[in-house]
Image (cartoon, helix red, strand yellow):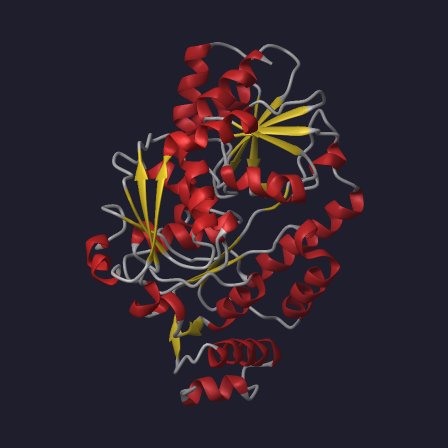
Length: 398
């Protein structure tokens, strides 16, 4: 790989150990992918922030960098952390909370601007920008809907790229790396959180390692596209989906579709699977959770309108948690009204990567295909998926 004089100097330690380490790792990854050079990025996003995900080894790695006075050289955000909020169910062990707070403190000392899985709501990328993002839903969103450019990095690599402000010129940073390798035609699509999430999971299974071109999603709303992409990314390693008429310049990709795998999905075929997933509720403490990925202010406003229209929550029953970025102000009138109606705002946190079973929670009702996929393993709970309106209605009636 070609390095500039400045890059060689960093590699040789002129800026200190953490930056030399970062350069060594990023160059090694780039070399393995036959990248010819490094390119600047304007925004890095780090995953692997929950203590339950990274454990003591991850904590010690971040601590070593922060202890060496490392600071991010570009705008950098990080994924949400474990849900340490108090609830009627209980709380996490003190040792876990203490270590989680250390991780947050170290990343903030390095310059992390926000903790969220939706960094595009904190700083929206521009078309054609190069990024170094590690959160799968965010990478898919920015490549597929905005037209910015980011590989799907590992959490530690994105952190090191944030220190450098550079990444390797390979993968979807190159136009040829963005070409679809499979084609999916969808029939009878209905734009909803539930159907979009389930469709994302199904297409992710069909295209586990390749970028798909998807047609037949007429009328798909942006918020449903986001749910689709988050679900897709939980089962596929691909960093992008070309959504016909939604992805910028999507029609240009049609010329690359002559020799690719082809699939057809009828949404009605998913209904038998859906009935099993929607009716799997058992006895035990239930949590209603919406916000995987983190919610926009517009989504919060829409849910408040629903709750105001449908009536007050009865005392007792399950709690409703809404996941948002830690940059959202709790003084916001919408959030105040939601809290008054018994809703808990999960700010900067991620219940999906939290051992909810330690709080006594038995199962979760959610509208997220990503949460459906990950929570049984990561949170130690059973999961039921329903459309967003159904989740809210059931919460009110519980």
